[in-house]
Amino acid sequence: MVDVNLVLRSTRVITPEGTRPAAIAVSGGTIAALLPHDAEVPAGAVLEDVGDDVVLPGLVDSHVHVNDPGRTEWEGFWTATRAAAAGGITTIVDMPLNSLPPTTTVDNLRVKQEVARAKAHVDVGFWGGALPDNVKDLRALHDAGVYGFKCFLSPSGVEEFPELDQEQLAQSLAEIAGFGGLMIVHAEDPHHLAAAPQKSSEQYADFLASRPRDAENTAIQNLIDQARRLDARVHVLHLSSSEALPLIAAAKAEGLKVTVESCPHFLTLTAEEIPDGATEFKCCPPIREAVNQDALWQGLADGVIDCIVSDHSPSTADLKTPDFSSAWGGISSLQLGLPAIWTEARRRGFDLTDVVRWMSEGPARLAGLDRKGAIEAGRDADFAVIDPDATFTVDPAELQHRNRITAYAGKTLHGVVKSTWLHGRRINDGGTLAEPSGRLLERNN
Ligand SMILES: [Zn+2]
Image 1 (spheres, rainbow, N blue to C red):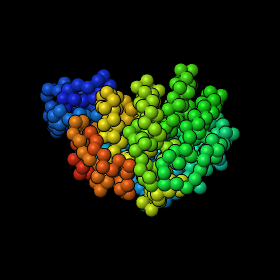
Image 2 (spheres, helix red, strand yellow):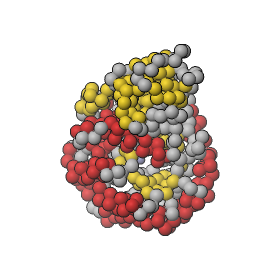
Image 3 (tube, rainbow, N blue to C red):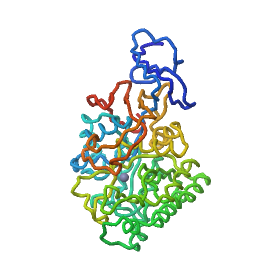
Image 4 (cartoon, protein in one colour):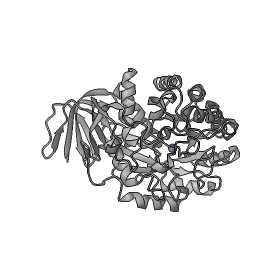
């Protein structure tokens, strides 16, 4: 074997064929081969033996709001990618909104890439945005390397990123389907939201009533109908309403190109536990009741939900006012997604191979990142090494996020990330982070 420079050895390596003892041979940042655990280390290679710690493929988080440039006081590429590295994530795909400019033209994409270039501690790709007036820009953005296009069907929360009505959605979807692209959708129906009771309140129940399940269910049904009519590929972002699962399952059974993600907060936090005024728990769609959460886990078990991604969407503390109706909506969790999900998954009888399917393989497949998402020869040598049985208590002061506000504060979680590896380099060694070595990723290269 030529030019192997690293061998990472563990009694528990999660491969596409299951968990087994192995020695991963790395050459030039790429996985060269999976060798037997006791294989001789090639001359010139460094051996890193992590004992019984589990080696996972580096996690892929395809739903991160980095907000840089423009709202860098909320988050930025430096802090977000450090948080990712600390949390076992080796690839993020940045959302097109909340930064200024938004990623809605090729020029804007280049601005964002320039800002990210020197700050990226992990690999970074970009989603484009679909607005009412940029249908003409979508093809060029696709060719420039975005992984797909995000749109809203209800107000996004920032004025520079307006939502699409059904006719505009059809126009954008037809354009994107024409070049084989992907539309990713914030699916809440604006008419159902407008009809729901809206009032200023510090009580979570009032906020929950303002974002009913019907709004999600209706928007998702309409989206499925459009996908069928236009033969378009669509992805439902941050599913909260479990009532939409049968709709999505039926669409998949019909052969439509529909996928769906959910998020750690919907799967590990419940409406019942949210204290008055605790707007660090506010996001849209909202965290719902425990019974809804149980059904989402069934959706994961059934394979209806394709992936789990953070929807990390922070803001400064002053925007998290106690009034749920006016506080900024977004939950900060990039660094904590893996332990949060693993803690709940193990309690419900799932194992780490399930977590890898949902948090690495699934998001990589969604975005078409075919060098990511699995430990096998030919893929990037991106790994997370964890002690799945060790626990820690979330102390916001220890997070790498720019704003250390989190709905997980004080929770005791299973799964300590011991190290993170990117292109065969250790970028996180027990919480000590290396200088940036992340790459900017573009579709198909
Ligand atoms: Zn989001």
